[in-house]
Length: 628
Image (cartoon, rainbow, N blue to C red):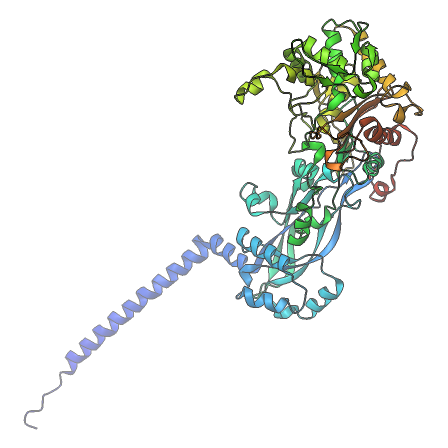
C-alpha cells in the first residue's frame, strides 16, 4: 500500500538483542554483587553476624551472689538472707509500661512506694536489666500471676535472697542495714560489680564491709523466644558468695546493755582493752532495720525522723557530750606524770575562786559544806570538784590539752565503721580560730569536764581502755574475723595499734587505778551503789554533766527536776582490776547522777560479759559454721 513503511527486521533484531544483552549483563552484575555480598557476610563477617543473631535468641542473665552472713563472737546470727518471690520486669521487652503496671496492679498489690521505687530504678538502671516491681510476694499473689503470666511480656517471677535481721533492732547502731541502690550510688559504684544486685550496705558494718559481704555476680546464658520468654539455660558461670563476718560483739552483752538503758536515751560502748575489740555498741532508742531493706515507706520514715528521741541518731558513734567528772582520772594521771605529789592535800570548802575574782565555782557537795581536806585519792573517790578546779589551774590549759589529746580525746578513734565524729578539747588556739579570747575560768571548768569540752561515747570508752591497758591503746574494731563461705576457714584480724599514753612510772597508773577502785568499793565512793557487791574488782568513775543552766531560784533534784533540765549521767569502768578484760563507757541523757543511773548500767554490762553464761551457738551450728 502506498505510504506504508517497510519493516527493517534485521535492524529491530539487532536492537532487541542489544537490549537483551544489556539486561542480561546488568542482571549478571547484580547477581555477582549479591553473591559477593553474601560471600562477604557468610565468610568474612561471619563471626560478627553470628554474634548478633545469638544475641537475639540468647539472653545473658546476671546471677546475684549470696550476701555474706554476720555473726556475733559466739555464732549468733545477726544478719542473714531468706528466700522471697519477686515480681520483675525487663523494660526493653515492654511496649506500654503504664498499661502493663495498671494490669499487674489488678493481680498483685502495688502501693505507691512500690511504684515510686520501680520508676526510680527505671530511670537509673539499663532497660535490659530485670527490675524489681514487688518484693516478697505472698504465695497467693504468686499463684495469681503464674496463671496469667502469658499475658505479660517481659514480666516474670524470680526467687531471690533478701537481707533479714533476725534480732530486730539489736546492735543496729553497729550493724547498720542494706537498702535499694539509690540514684546517687549508681554514679559512684562500678556497674560491673553490681550486675543483678539491687541492694547495697547503707551504714554501719553493712556499708564498711560492703566489698567483702557483697560477693561476685555470676551469669547464665538463657535461650529466649521472640517474646523474651526463657526456653532453656545454655550455660552458666556461678556467682561467688560474699564473705561471712564474725564480730567482736557479744549479743548477750549487747542485749544486757540495751535492756539496762531501758527507755532512756543514751549510749553504751564496751571494749576489750587487750585488743580493741568492741564488745557492745549501743545507741538507744533503737529501731528495726528490716523495713529499710526493701525501701521504708514515707510514713514510717517520717515517724522515725519526727520522733523527738531521734532513734536514727547513732549516739555511740557521733553523739557528743560533756564528760563531766569522768575526765578526772585522765587529768590526775597526767598530773602525776608531770610531778604532782598525790599526798598533797587541798581544802575544799564547797567552792573555788580564782585569785582576785569573786566568782565562785561550786563543788557538787557545796551545800554540805564541801569535802574538807582532800588528797588525790579522796578527790577521785568522792569526786571533789574543788580539788580538780585547783589541779586544772596548776596544770594550765596547754598541759591539759596535751594530756587529753594523748588519750585520744579530740580525735577519731579509727573504728571500722563510717560516720564517726570526734569530740572537742577546747584550747586557746581553738577559740582564737573563732575570734574569741580564752578566759581563765574556762581552764577551771576543764578540770571537771565541763564547758565546751565534748566526747563521743566511743571516744570515752577508748580512752578508758587505754587507761585499763597501762597506757597502751588499739583502734576499736567491731569485726573480729572473716570466714570464707566455701572452705569455712576463718581468718582472724590482727589488732591495730592506736593511741598510747607514755608513763614515766607504772606507780602513777597504780595510784589512779586504786583510786578508781575506791570509787566503787569505798562506802563514800560515788560508785559504791553499783559496784561494792560485784564478785570481781571494778575500777570506775562517775560523772554528772550539766547540760542546761538552772534558774537561780531553782534547787536541782535528780528526780523531781524537769527531765530536760536534768544532768547527763556518765560512768566509765573497767574490770577485773588485776587483768582488765572489759572497759565500759555509759552515757544516759538527762539521767541525773552518774553513780546512781549510769553506774548500774555499766555493772550489768560487765556482769553479762565476765560472769559465766552459756554462749548461744545454735544458730551458727544450723548453718554449719564452726565457732570459737
